[in-house]
Structures are given as structure tokens and as C-alpha cells.
Amino acid sequence: MQLLEDYEGYVADREQALAGLRRYENEATALEIEQSNDAVHFLYIDKITEAASTFLSGFPGTCLYAAKANPHPALLRLLWAAGVRHFEVASIREIENLLVVLPLAQLYFMHPVKSRQAINRAYGLGVRHFAFDSLDELRKIKQETGHAEDLSLLLRLSVSQAGAAYPLDNKFGATLMEAPLLLTHARQIAHKVGVTFHVGSQCLEVDAYANAIWNIANMLEGCGVKIDMIDVGGGFPVSYPDMEPVPLQDYFDAIQKAVEECGFQDIDLFCEPGRALVAKGGAVAVRVEMRRGQSLYLNDGTYGSLFDAGQLGWSFPIELYRAGRLQSCDEVSSFQLYGPTCDSIDKMKERLDLPDDVCEGDWIIFRHLGAYGYAMQTKFNGFYSETMVAIESATQNP
Ligand SMILES: *Cc1c(COP(=O)(O)O)cnc(C)c1O
Image: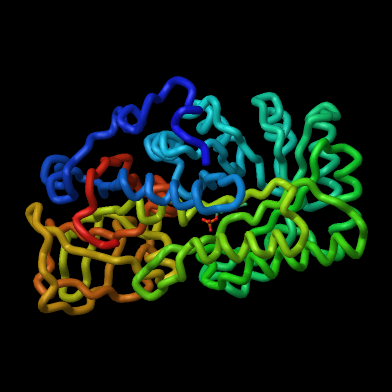
């Protein structure tokens, strides 16, 4: 586990990590004082720190944060203050933004299909870990890094997505059949060679990681190729109203067991959580602008931070705030929620239960939305929110 003592420099502790972010005791006070016209994003200091320490102390290797889940600078600094030093990135813009916020961060460029400019610039900025899943990409990496001799190259493999609530569909990744040839070529140009995979996001199947590790071990044994690194990717789950995963430690234990049984205990092990590091550390409050019968019109929607709720019908813990107070939900009824843009797909796929008397001016808080909420907002139609505030203690909800 990396401790705060290694932390060199420009952010002394989490107080400074949050500099520039307004901080409130609780959500009610925040909403009352902010008087925001846009949705309000909450960052829960303790929950971020807690999730980071779960990974840093429990995962039997190095933990990378997958920056796409939520790249807000305050969140990145908070993770850093909690001890996270390694970050998974997929684009040159993610790299540049990260280095502005955390100049000493170790970056891993894990998109298997990168532009030549992106590879070249990333190498120039000090990135040495790159993913690939084809000979074409290997050639690009070789040429754009000027035949560098200090590369760590990770072959992205496609693995079963069967345990994932949000499968990534194997858009990327070489097959196990293709792997020996690709690894052999990588070995010729790389300082270190490894494999990486992603079991799909919100993976509820503990054994998915171990199964992938076993398949890789069998493939390597069959072809006699050796590797220096294994990266088990992201996909670690968090709880949502209709998904209650087993504790993360069970996942870590299963991974460690597979690593040992496959004889990988001496190679570098990485994981790349996005969702599991930050989902519970965030929430978004959206305001009801109009009620018409059982329809509610909101100031945020599927083009904003509610893509997963809207398009996927994913359910989040929700609560209603009125005039700075939490409303009790004695009498509930179901409502169709609409986002603010003029597009007809800007609505929630499923109806949501809310207090019967919900009305204009009420705020609906969607919890466990620290991942893939703020990060996925578009500016379509002029509706989006840069209002992020820190909350000292979440009023409720584990
Ligand atoms: C999105 C992504 C992650 C993070 O996935 P989560 O399911 O949020 O943990 C990690 N690695 C890669 C390569 C990704 O694309």
C-alpha cells in the first residue's frame, strides 16, 4: 500500500485536494445555498477515500483508476491524496488533463486502437505502458515511439462478458488463438510484455476474473511464451437497488488464488477499477421544472448525467428534497421522467417511484452516480452542469 508519505509535493493532503470546491455539511444545505439552475453534482469525501483504501489495501497488486468513470480534477486529487498513483487512460486528452491535475501520475494508455499522434505525444509526455490488440497497432507504437526500448506492452484479450451487467461486447481484444503470435512480436520490441482484459462493467460473477486468468495461463503454457505483467482490468461492481454484489474482497481473494495457482505470483499484477472506486462517492441532484399529471420534466437527463438511468433503465437509489429537507416517502406513485433537451429519447426508460405530491422546485437525488454520471454529460441544447460540491457526510445510504 502506498502511503501519504510518498506523496511529493503539490497537494499536501485532502484538504488541499478539495481546494476550489465548495464544501457543505450535507446535501440539503448545499442545495439551499447553491440555488443552482443546473443539476448539482455531489462528491462524498469519505466514500472516495474508503473505496480507494479498499483497493489499495485489498487488491494483491497495483490499482489503476480508470479516469473515464469521472475525470473531475477534485476527484482525481482526492484519489491521489488517498494513495492512488496509477491511472488508466484512453485518449490523449485524458492524458493531458490528468497531467495538468497530477503531474506525477503514472499513466497507462490502454485503448487498443490509438491515433499515431496520440501515441507519439503520450510517449513524449512520459507514458510507457500501452495496450494493443493487433500487429497494425504494434507497428504504430513501434514507429511513433521512435523504436523505443523502454516500452511495456499489454495485449488486450477478449474474454467472456457473461457475468457483467454492462457487457463491453468484445469490441476490442484479440482471441486466445491470436495471442501467441502477437505476444511473440511484442516481445521483440518491448522491455516488458503482458496481457490485459476487461470482464465487462459491473461484473457480478466473482469467478469471471479467475476464469480469464486460467484461460490465459493455459494459452501461455500451450505456446511457451512468458509474460511479465497481467492486468485484470475494471468491472468491479457496486451495489444498486436491484444488484447486490458480494464484497470486493471476495473478488480480490479469487484473483489472488488464480494468480498463485497459475504460477503468476512473481509477475506484475494490475487492476483498473472505474465504477467501483467512485460510484458511491458521487450523486447528482436534478430539479423538477414541471409536473404534468404523472410526468415530471427535469433539468438533467440522458444527454446529461442520467444516461444509464435513461437509456439502460439502470436503477439508482433516489430521494426527494424539498426546500432543503428530505421528504419522507409514505405515499409513492410512479412517474415518467423527462430530461430537459428537445429530443424525444431524452427520457427515463423505466418509471420511477417518488412521493405522490412531488412538484415543481423539488430536487431528486440519484445516488451511487459518481461513476459515468458527471463524466457522460454532453452540452446538447445548452443543458449541463459544472456545479460540483463536496459533502462532508452523506445523510444516509451505505
Ligand atoms: C472502462 C474501462 C475500465 C473501467 O471499467 P469499470 O467497469 O468502470 O471498472 C477499465 N479499463 C478499461 C480498458 C476500460 O475501458
